[in-house]
Amino acid sequence: DTGVSQNPRHKITKRGQNVTFRCDPISEHNRLYWYRQTLGQGPEFLTYFQNEAQLEKSRLLSDRFSAERPKGSFSTLEIQRTEQGDSAMYLCASSRSLQGGGETQYFGPGTRLLVL
Amino acid sequence: SQKIEQNSEALNIQEGKTATLTCNYTNYSPAYLQWYRQDPGRGPVFLLLIRENEKEKRKERLKVTFDTTLKQSLFHITASQPADSATYLCALDGGSGYALNFGKGTSLLVTP
Image 1 (spheres, each protein chain N blue to C red):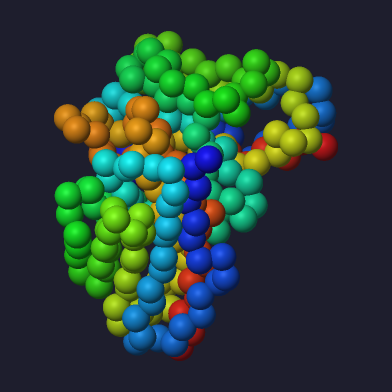
Image 2 (image 1 turned 180 degrees about the horizontal axis):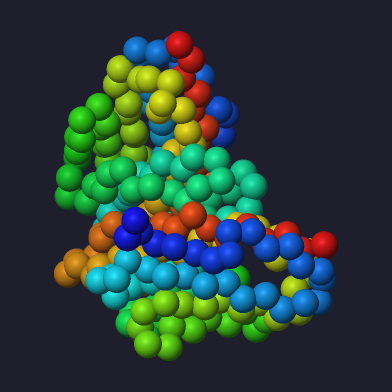
């Protein structure tokens, strides 16, 4: 399967701990996105990379959150000092840039985080 | 403020009927609108994209309309099947980049 993969699929942590998630996009895709989804809501945009450059960050992305895509391939999302409100599904998506935008985003299965 | 509103109630229909889902938006001028399907515990899966200069788009049993005057998109599934049961998400480009802004989704249940 050459789709988007995310690890781990589930993470349970205690409040105050740091967690890191990994996303491996589809190999030829130059754009990578992180979203967060809570129960009953649609995905909310967090941040986006084109190649290794982080080009856009949502106001939702507090200073406890940091994302990297060091070589323009896989990406990591780290949450420091987790809070119970961080409990959510973290989704990664990738796409290949198209002139004029509107490219399809391919989503991974998500990492479900539970902060106790 | 910007809003994307989808049918708040779950939609229950009988197999074989046409399901119609609504997406209304305010304070957006989207260049395109997308529909995704999401099954429980899984990531969204792309279904259709329609651009601002297109009125209608079809793909197999799916049809999407886009009315930029009404600021509304309708998503139709004809000859619905129980396997169509899922949550359907409407998504717009935010205008400032390539990130998508999603509605809350509409849950569709197709019963035999």
